[in-house]
Image 1 (spheres, rainbow, N blue to C red):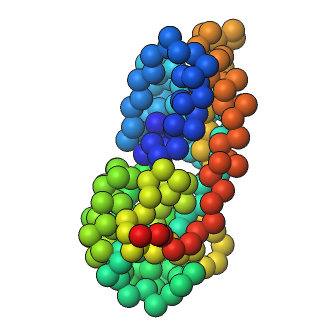
Image 2: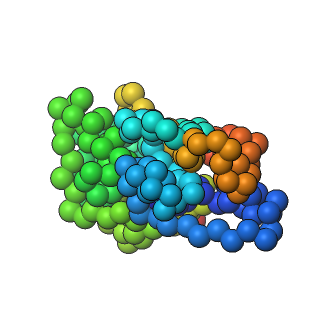
Amino acid sequence: MIPAASTTVALLTDPFCAEHPLVRVQLESGLRSAEILDRIRRFELDAGLVHPDGEDTAGLLVTPLYEELHVLVAGSELPTGRSGTIGWQDALELPMCLLNTGMRGRQLIDDALATRGLAASPQLETDSAVTLLAHIGTGRWASIIPQAWLRSLVPPAGARVLALDGPAIRARVALVTDAAEPGSVLTRALIRTAQAVDVDASLRVPPGPATD
């Protein structure tokens, strides 16, 4: 799965495992969407969680799960001067850590900045959601991340969660499997779970200040 889905995958795997207690699930995180799709086509993966937009999904079955909304999370020591929203230019003036260049989540941020005539130059880059929040936890870093992460990864004490002004950055996350019929029994069962669970509704938590 893509890094962005590592914080939300439990909303799918938990009900799936509860319904199928004898099934063993192995998860790989830190993969890129294109790599996941390629490995599904080569039957190295049964399924994957990806950003499907802009990817070649021919011959694959795409089951939408939820839509990401990006927010800024700032460490407790950073003077944002804002209580609810922050401008992109102001955000870039903070010590920034972001996902690696080339990852879809980072591309969304870079594209949004480019439309505003801006560009990010983070001092630190990683492929890990946990690593980003760990640095924010020092109080001296900020990051732009999917709001969905904050459902399972609680912001560090004192951190502020701010909406970014202007058009929101949104990205779909979907379950992808091979479209060949009839498909494996487990794959069909996973798709049924994905269709039955309203992941998007579970993640609708408005941005706001973190609690100590």
